[in-house]
Image (cartoon, rainbow over all chains, first blue to last red; front, top):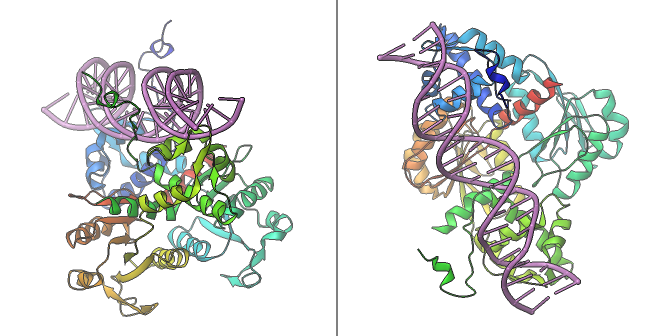
Length: 221
Length: 221
DNA sequence: GACTGTGAATACCTTCACAGCA
DNA sequence: TGCTGTGAAGGTATTCACAGTC
């Protein structure tokens, strides 16, 4: 009945990192880089909150950073350099990633342009579509392949992440197929969630759903 | 100390509609339209779940629909026609909406193309950017205006919804300005949340943050 | 005194279990 | 019996309050 944490005095608890905190950690990394560029060496959780426009409470920041390890000094704050380094490591910012775009309509094109312009660590390495009008086109030197041929052509591209931007009806099938081909992470733009067996990470983005939330709330008034 | 609901026997509780349920209601509407097209007249919560590929539990569906009113019949299921009608009403699908795009980089362009292609009820009525290279360009007949002139030019467009797709540093300022100009709903693509006074509805979409979740989880392994 | 680290309290959402009707 | 409507339970994320440390 003795809490094992109490056995070692000064033990560090380090709550597990949970998904919701990751975009926040990413934001911390961004503003800490700015602080670094300004020559700052340390920062407090309050200072960080201020740099983020107080959109995140300092308590939340401390809880998030606490999960990374004992990086702060009580009474002082956090040293920025090790914090940035640890964040980059935890967020996987130190690797490059190869992306397969499945579905090259407006959304697929948009995402490809956005993510490659935004971050150099993301490379679009394969593009698929089912429309004969699109298959065979080139985008940044990459030939758009037929979705039907994915089993033959995806493996060569050696992708880590698939972005699914196909109509809702086709999404589950596409997801299962890329998962079967060894992709372990999927960003899904089709409305509502996919379910897959095995260790596949799925994140859903539902743009039309978000618009529906806005129009719903507006029409209440 | 008496629960007022108990005063009227057979009272209908109707829990309040919460944001998270709206994208689900939107998905129900989509598949119910399919069911209508197939000539079906009624459906059960289980049937709906099946049409959604069991990505949503039937219990969840019942809780969501229950919030709309007493639309089901115990032992029978739901009549599809009134359900579709009620969903369209609640989701604001019966109105047209005028959208202002603020920030016309990759993301702004992408969203404009996507949303107008996807749903006719959304009209892009104004576009703003701060880059002189972009200001003055036309998109679907709409001239891109300078963000600096928003106070003069936005009112004439009579927009209900603003889509903010500017860099993180500029987002809070843009949001405050569109809110001051009477916009009551904002879809924000800048990382991390905005905070605004007054009755402004804000939804955040953080694409880079979602990608960070994927690269984080991948680099754990 | 200042600031972090963290258990407890709170709020929120989903799932469970079952009462209530047709 | 079959299915909805719903209170209760469970799980997860945020906020509060404060002990611990410099």
